[in-house]
Image 1: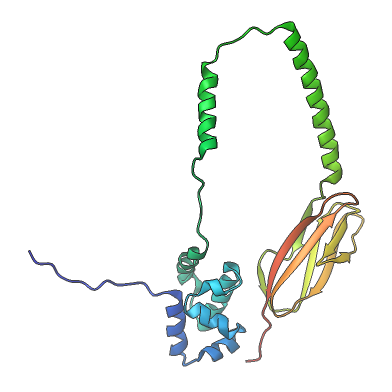
Image 2: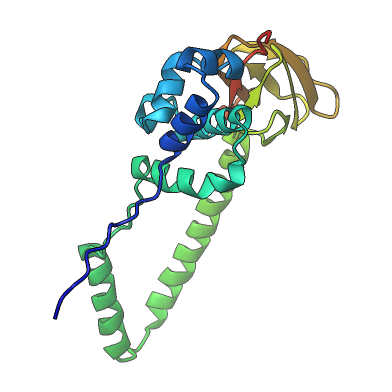
Length: 235
């Protein structure tokens, strides 16, 4: 019996798509960086699949989509491949069944074999007193929790992980009235119904916007937005 040798076909990587298309346009990496407003080091990282050198996979996706758009490659043809390549940098871990879980299963087995016992009046009285004590503890915990729990906050704008080309970014949201709201440490005026709106100036690259709210005595509740600012360049 004879076997025919066949050449194994491999799928091109996203980087190979970018390089082949860029070279087909006779562009250098520097030209691609100018046309996309993406730094040269990130262009090189995308073309060679070095996603670990980018700030985060979220921004690698934004860079890749922008690069594909400028090169004229439909993102729908690259998205599944991008997800497969970047998954290497975000492995999923599943916890194993440890001793505590095994012991819990044993306790359930033992409990199912136990027989009913006689309950004496004294035990009933002690049980009633314990129940009342537990109710008091739960009530006190509830009151203290309400005092020290931070107010809720809803960020209307911006959305999570955005890429923008305007240096001014409007931030708006709602929280409990009379809360203390700050954006990157600066106090923000709050309307009587708990609405706030503020404009911040972005610097080029990745910006971290930290929005916090708290009451007079509570802890702080924080929402974070990561905004990638890439200004338009003159073609």
